[in-house]
Length: 224
Image 1 (cartoon, helix red, strand yellow):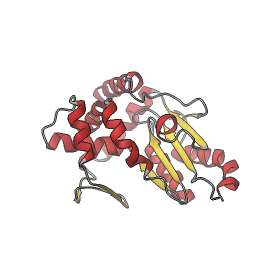
Image 2: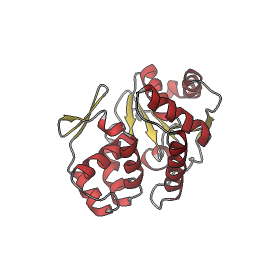
Image 3: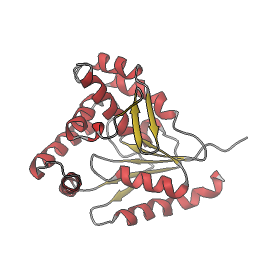
Image 4: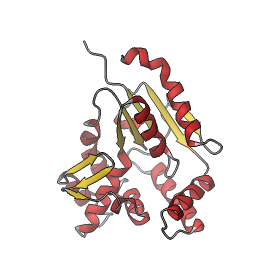
């Protein structure tokens, strides 16, 4: 009997750095990577293009079921069109947070997320990876930072991309996203009971990656 495919989940609030850290951990281990937040961004973009209100739960979920999504290297393809940059705008990020509250959409995307779990392993980041999507993952990390630090990081990220950015607006947006994520009825953002807390206010990316890899070491012999 083959051992189960190992999964590392990294959950946390917006702009906590979980995506960057999850990608680097996956690369170090040679694992697949799931950016679950990208799926909600894709849905936000697709519904916007089809003039579907982000508040219309059923229409949003039905739209998601019709989408053909491919993650290829560092590209994101929707119905064979490259939307890699389109889904990374602040406006679509806000839309993703709004559509993510809908239970029908979260149900529609569950099977899609499970399909990413392939040998030799998976690193999945999001908000409910360890609590809902992969509850049996051997290693769960809840990665966070203060709202002010997260806002500063997002501000610098946008400036580096030569995009317009206002720190106060970003801070307010993160506060609103945290409120929606933590209080939604379906799959709220919470730390799994068996997750390890990783606060990154005073950590570099390299230090955070090293922390996750170190915590995964005891599980390697069981997934070999």
